[in-house]
Length: 156
Length: 166
Image (cartoon, rainbow over all chains, first blue to last red; front, side):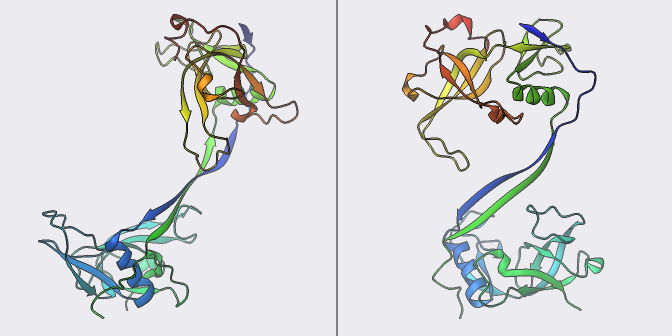
């Protein structure tokens, strides 16, 4: 085998690339109806499940005792922020915004669990404990996804 | 209304994109640029003499430096392989096709590559293969410069000759 002479200097080599995972997910019976509620009714539905209270977004069993089934409950469109992660340098294609925003958990009034979403405005005032309200995508632009709620906005 | 709509949303598209800025490092940069010149580079362990391809700066086995770069032949042995029967987005190859570990002659580890120009059922552990390159002027210095390996038609290599080079 021939030795390959090593050059004195090696020019760096780099490449930008995007790894894409184009998933199509089946929603299931419960989440599918929750999403239809966002799109068609502009309502946020939870499911009251065994020993766990009202779960939003809903799932078809209790995380406490694994019992199936529950009762639909509409929860409020306002709630309280229970966690904040501010993204000051969003990455295009990865994050749901190209402007600085924050991931938040929001415990809606009437719910016993928090829903993950984003806050895009008044970030300087955003705290754990802030009161926020759902802001909806316009009629005709809601597609039956969690983004039918465009963001949560701080309530003054 | 005391319930969400009965007519549910059945599917959601969740397009996850992970944008990377990948830096090759010295040896990988040399390896990729050499492919453009139709050369396959490896590196030799200063302690054990084992040859790694693509080249590594230190042996993952002995941890000794692999200072010497070597040019490998374009022929080798299918050490192990799988037959792909499921189409994958972004890979426009007629199924079934074979992806194999190919131990180049003189190398102590294998490269992954496609095997083409033969039926999937005709690939065996020990099949002797050779690289098929993109033509001059079309090679960009990336791993697609070797389009695939194809059988040479020579007799199969004996099991003992490659079993430690998977």
